[in-house]
Length: 189
View 1 (spheres, rainbow, N blue to C red):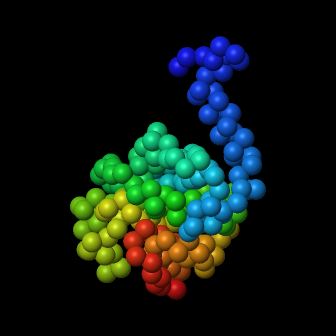
View 2: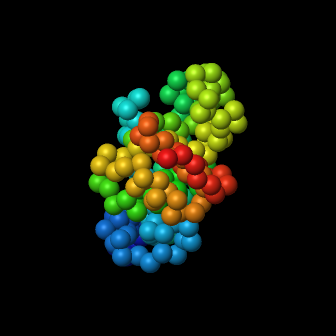
């Protein structure tokens, strides 16, 4: 990267400074993104996996543009941990997760129970439970099952439903919420 002769800053340095400023200012931005009420001009996703012990906390979108390196990190994090298979996670799903988390005003990350599922993993889970769909959106990288410490299934599902951007399944007995970017619908209790 070349340096600007006037001040010695690189473009990358300027973007980094902008991102830091945007993170601090994000709560004051007006909603300009339709279904992503509260998403702001930056979008950040924070997830933890109890299965792998890994976490991701990244800004993946700034001023109307997705950041490919951040999305690659999300894709790897949301992989099928049983097969280590990855897929490009649909950015609409990432947006729903991030917007829901922001609306919940939580300091802790979502705990991800399931992100991408390979067809092999989905078939195995389906053989154990009738609640697993044959053509699950998890296999398309379009769904995640999440919980959040300090928030109930009802609270999490209300935030996801407020996005009006996909399916929301409430699984109170198992203490998680399914979020996907498929048709808008709600099920469960």
